[in-house]
Every structure is written in C-alpha cells, then in structure tokens.
Amino acid sequence: MTALFSRRQFMLAAGASLAALPLRLSAQAPLTAGVVINRIKDKVGLPWNNATYRDTIKIGRPETRVRGIATTFMSTYDVIRQAHAAGMNFVVTHEPTFWSDGDVVGDLTRDALYQEKLKFAEANGMVIWRFHDHWHARMPDGIFVGWKRALGWEGYAAPENDRRFVIPETTLGQLAAHVASALQSRGVRMVGNPSTRIRTVTRGAHTLVGNLAAVPTADALIVSEAREWDSIEYVRDTIASGQAKGIVLISHEAGEEAGMDECARWLRTFVTEVPVQFVATRDLLWTPGA
Image (cartoon, rainbow, N blue to C red; front, side, top):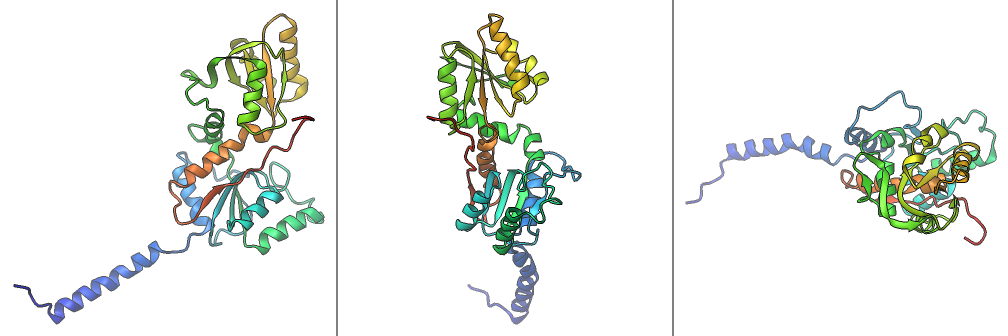
C-alpha cells in the first residue's frame, strides 16, 4: 500500500532541497581565469613557487569568465587574434607576450605595437597567462613529453636518461629530415656529413657545458637555442678530430611547441566546461628552398 506524503514530510523535504540549493549553485559558478589557474596549480604535481616572475598573468584579470582556452608556445599577436576568432579568451602561453623573459614593459609604454597588441587583448576581454617554470619542472617535463610524442620517440628513450634515444639506424641527413617533418619546421640545420650513420641521439642543452658530456655518448645531438660560437664549434672540431658525429640545430619553437599541444591534452583532463585547443605559433625561421 502506498503511504501518503504528510504536510510535515513535505515541509521537511522542501527544507532539505532549499538547504542543498547553494551547493548546486556553487557547483555551477562561472569558470574564471583564476579558477583555471588554481586548478593547474593543484594538478601540476609540485609545490607552486609564488616567487616566479614568469608564471603570472600578463594581460587581463583573474575574475574574467573563461569562454575557451588556447594553449600556445608563444602568445604572438597572430596567436592572440586566432584564439579570439575561435571564441577562446584565455591564452596559456609558454613563452613571453611582450618580447622579454620577464615581460618587462616599462620601456614599451609608448611603443605603437605594444599599445596595439595590449588594446586588442583588453578590448576583447582576453587573459594571457604564462605557464613556463612549472610546466618544465613537472615530472616528467611537460614540454619534453610533447616533443618526444611529436617525433614518435616515446619508446626509444634510454631507461637511465630520457634525453638520450636509441633509434633505428639512420643517417644524419635522414635524421634531420625526420626532425624537420615531424616538428613542421623549415629552419632545421645540421653540422656533419649527411651520410654519417646515426643510432644514438641526445637532446642537447643550450650551453657548451651542458653538451660536453653528451657528445662522447651520442652519434648526434639535437639542440635548440644553442650559441653558434660554442656548442656548434665544439662539434665541428670533434668531427675534424676524426670522430663520426653530427648535430641538428632546431629553432626555439621546434624545440618546445609540441609541449604546449601536450599541455592542451593535459588541461582537458580536468577542465571540461569549455573548449581547450592548441594554437600553433609556427616556426619563424626558414631557409631558402625549405
């Protein structure tokens, strides 16, 4: 037999529903840039360094409601406009917005391009936030994870050093061609005989000191942001000494852009309310005929 619902029971049930209402409303609160940043801080897997001058908002306000998120290697003017055109108003950039590591704008306030870029972002309610130090510090390094994925080398990393790869035997010329194709770069250069046989490859460092230990243990280095007068000349002299070595030089973008595609994949695992999309900066450097 079905029991009748008494007036007292009705009032108690109604009261319980009203009591739960603020919780439901809270769960539906707007997704702001500040909320997304706090989620990233919570999910990145290491204590947040609040002293960082890099991983901060460069344009906009944390209370801005997020309509969509664009991850990118560098928040160039072109990337910002692409993000806006696609309906995304929160740009997570790995590198600077205003052309210096610290995004120092004191000397730019009268610069016409600075004013135009800033005005465009502000007029369209955009937020630009940099995610550099902590994405690199994450274990494993988020940039390097994406780079290995782009090259198709996830299974080739040496157990003792994930910057060293044992790949199917190839030549230096073929290695350079694969890197250029996989990273969609027209600016790849190399030093060494294109016919040199390559089996072990190390992702090199920016500095000579960082590359000294790698040269003896690898057939070839892949290096971005290296100074031409130190690491490259060291490899040239190594080859002149009779050793079969090579170095493949890639641009800053080619070395790190795929890592921000990886960042978009990662963000989608815990930001589900709005679209999250990678916007390519594209390699600036190119060589004739490339």
